[in-house]
Length: 601
Image 1: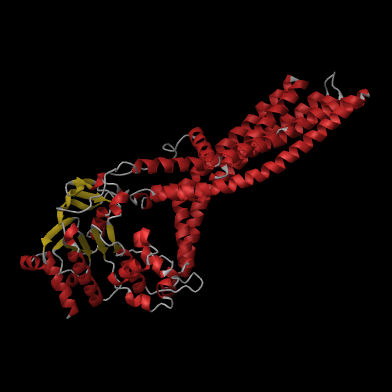
Image 2: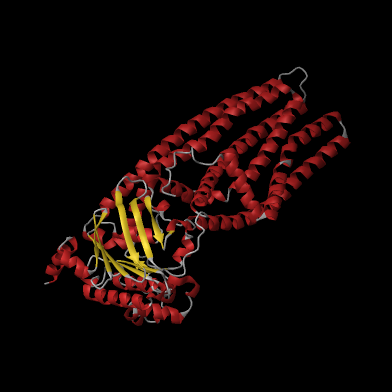
């Protein structure tokens, strides 16, 4: 739980058989009847075609011998084979389409649930894990194709075996054609793996190219790009990143394509030799030659289809490998914290020798932090940029686990408390808030999902968060659609969006921990000061359950009303105390406070 091991190429991926078996189990649990029926109809629709060569041989033999009954039997066999195959393929394709649609929804829902069920956000900020998730995202459409691909593969393989058996009835030597097909199978099965590993190594450049594309095509960066005349630079950087990612992939595809062509040339030469061998035998007859031509031509076609299905199935299984990897990763990060969240806080929250560094980095952001946040207190965290203020709040919210040390809630290790239950007792807002383009009421109500549609609760949160003026300016009030990308949607200024986010953070009536991580940074100092005073008063009024309110701000003047002020300097805590005590100490807080105060004169 103190960090994730980096993925090492494909060594930590589940095996392909395990991934395929897991995919089948998932499909059977989701759509058992459709899976079985689709499987039977798909295979049944492919196999009859392989018998056509046999019926042609019998038909030609009957005509040559003047045997009308044999000729009629062969003709009926050909008709039944063709008709049955067509009927089964037609009906089967309908079932497979329905099955694919339903399983696609199940897979997409499953992937979304998996990514949302991890209690921390570490996997969202590690480049190595993002690369693997990028591949899973790009090829997520393949996940629901595993099953039709497997059905086609089994049917094609069965058809291929029948064709080889028919050829060997003429001469066992013709069975050697299978040996010449082995290189095509080897190249095909390895081709997908080589290309997929190359794509994963190229994923950082692909993500970078996508980032530049979003910069150049979305409104967020439009103003700054145009003012700085950086549009062409962004476009050029996007092209360079794309080419850097595409070049190794293209090179791998060319290499595997040439190998594939060479393998097929070898098989083609063997096929020509087989036909010549049968035609020149002393006991050869017209039926044998026709069977060899028909079955041999079918063998080439069936082999191509089987090899193609093998390659496509390999791609699909590779996608399912990453899905199973994600499931195992999620399982390793969930289900280990089963303790209940406390109903109240009696003593406080204590940091014991806590150190932390962000994923895949070696730099400590916090080092050996020892700190107690008393129950029922308003705590302000201040410090210069990069001092670790936001990191401290993320640890309190269990968005990360400490690299070293532990956080205790009334003597209970926070790491042993169910993160979902703990977060149900949290409230507050962050500086990097998200703009939820819902109805205004839902954008606020999302802060307490069970009460998202309770308008009185939403109105109360709007008042607590100081967003009343924003809602009053909307044409439909709380029923206004937010976001310019929607019909009749109302866009807000950055500061207005921030007020909506603050209101969302105050949806819960009795949170045990309220975290306000610079939620008013876009507002003027006076407005921020007024809001922080309101937050502090509200917290103290509800302190009977031990609520702790944590305020983070760059503006020292707005946090002087806090019961406890924590001053961070670098990776350490420099000072702790109330405003008067820290000013009297003439330390870092007093110095920074004086600098800011002078700036406002």
